[in-house]
Image 1: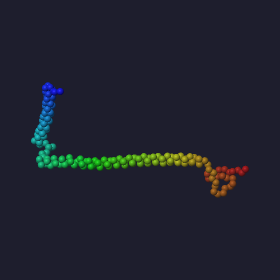
Image 2: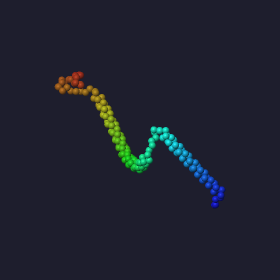
Image 3: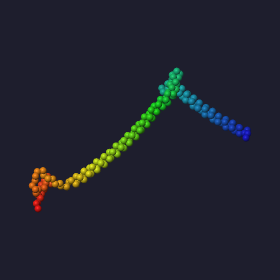
Image 4: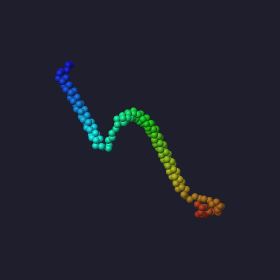
Length: 160
């Protein structure tokens, strides 16, 4: 369908408005930069110690160094990052192995602790059962009517 003249005019008007907005924005940006340059220039004239004058030769050398840094830093950081990442991965694996080993040692400690407690309980119960008086026979021949209990003569056996 052919466009009408009013549609063409509206389209051109909207494009013109967009261009005017872009020009206005660009003008404001240039004015801001100009004011910044002017402020720096005023500071230089006042002798501001934070500002330094640099020769064109030094500025060119600095620009070349910046370009070289932009080229080499990603390579250096990339290799260092890769090496660090590999180190991190191996360290994490070592940490996991150490944690598993700690868990195993802890389980073994608990096992030996339980065995110790069982043995101690068994020992205590044996002590209780052995605490009753035992009959010991004196190593030297004793008269037939005496019994030695825990190393002392307690009674005489009557003969019946």
